[in-house]
Figure (cartoon, rainbow, N blue to C red):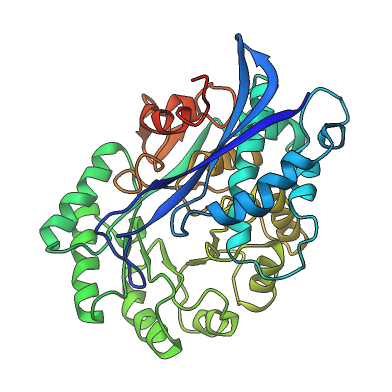
Length: 390
């Protein structure tokens, strides 16, 4: 068996929304289709992947380095020990051949795109949903049949007043979400507090609202916000400062007793380990948001989970960023604490399978081989165009 082709394209996910740091007017994503010579149902098995939101498409890196390395690999060198399937770990090693340590920037995103497609293909070859395959291989066969999800939104938008913000959050509640997330740091503290109070008024209590500063604040500002946010007892206070400023994160923990969250912009096990070593994160209340699709994929994410276990952290403290189906499978198969969801933005990549509602803050897993892209019709229309036989 072998990989016979890898197709790549760029898809826009642009919109007028903004957070405290960037707008999304020119945002793009890479999509790949990895075609194998394995036949199921009269067609070749194809694995699909894309990069998570917040980072741009990775065409140059994919075409110049990572796709050629996969295609140039000896087919026998990337087969698992059973001789019947691809080995994601061996393929990952080929992708990272001749790559120096460190520099975990855009290349981690490119590798994550291909890694997603590889795992999709592997699960399809075994004719199993990915979460079940992961549970069988790595979690003693134990899988969660439903996963906690929260609705991420609350972006700044031209002309968006408090009523429009409340209307947005009400749509999420009506869809079955119990926790919502909103952006802060893009306006004054006073304006942000008014926005937060408007959302709390709608949802009923601060513990159902998370806020995200997207790394905008310096230490003084992050502490000033912390003191103002403390009375609300929010679900979490997310990424107050630069994601690599572990000293800021550690100092902030001295001033904010409630839950904090960070990690979506740390793209390797080593950077995640530095957060755990030096960032003052608290195992009993804080949340880790590493996004496998931005950080070298699931192969690297499993290294991160192993590191967390060594440092006394439960996988249940991980709720990945990105709102995509790969992280949902990882959450169900490896016992994470939940997954982000984007029911209103970054379509068609945000959200999960059609016809499976969010119920009291949880979503069930579809019984579809692979990651489950085929069960999300608007996303499948984009992905299926990449394989010429579709």
